[in-house]
Length: 158
Image 1 (spheres, rainbow, N blue to C red):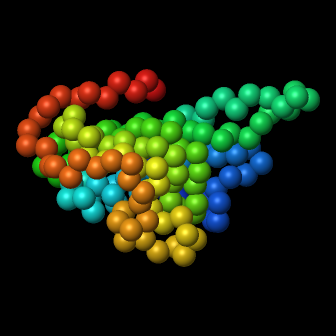
Image 2: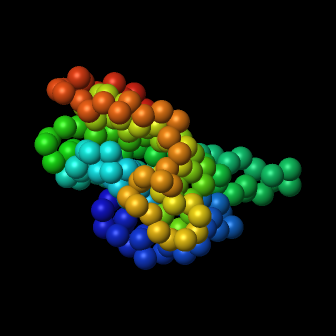
């Protein structure tokens, strides 16, 4: 998956929506990058994080043609440098360059929610980001750091 992600990084431009809509590989790579930046900004050093994306079925038009993909389910697993389990999951509905994902993503470290955000990164188009701070729009953030293994409460299907 990492090799595919590395290749996809070279494909970034303005908006990552072509005639087919969102690309699940590009969404997964960008979500990985933005979630890693946000976790590290929030004090959770990431040793590794791997994300996959699955395009939601967009259905067909009235004339039977395929509609563009407008949402991608994202599921990520990883570890902090201290060995804590990281999961990030949610639904991405927009992407700007490799600097921003929009939708709803939740991150957990050792089973404890550390953030839920509707935007990760900088969607302004400036191409600058501070690693997850000012560009993010959290819907909640516990602010507490986990103290031990609380189990994996993530039940997202792949």
